[in-house]
Image (cartoon, rainbow, N blue to C red; front, side, top):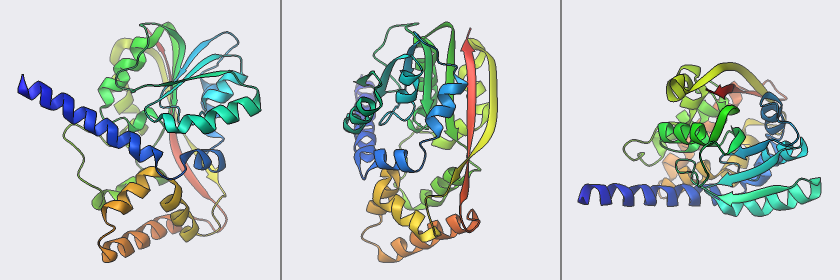
Length: 275
């Protein structure tokens, strides 16, 4: 019994840290300025139609939920970090999109079985620590024949490599937590869903990013706005040498992917139907 109580408490503390991490900086501005094209790509792949009941898991400030609503879906945007919803509500209102916002843990979604026609996540659910639990929940709330769509950074792509670069400077992950970019591997996603889905297809695509004139400006932008990067720097704040080393490694990573005007960030787009 004590082991069970300890495990529940550890999970609660982990989710509290995750919520706080994503509330750091200014993720909504990053989503709007750097990756705004990803949401519409996912919505189109999911073939959201008028009248569809749509769930966006780990929706952030709604960069996929809002396009889904504009396509005619009845959309619920769920996220562990409701601090991100304020910007989402303003942007949805400005766009004329009706979106319902609900705090929710991707690993324990507060929705009925088979409730949604479309369940999707845009570089969101990949950051929930226990991948199988999240995949199980995605399948559970999707109706039979309903569509599932996921867009995730690949391990080999730029953002996946950024997380690999930061890993030695980050706190050790808790037991059982899995690296987010694993969702960017088709074989991993297939294993998570198993025979519960059909028609699973995946494509590797790239996001063209022209936001940053120099590698250093990329690094500094993420240091200021991206919760995971901010958290890593806070972990080493008392060690100036390590801070300088990470500064150099992130700038070097960006430099290797920078063609002088832009970068290409690879992601995996997966679609499937619930069996």
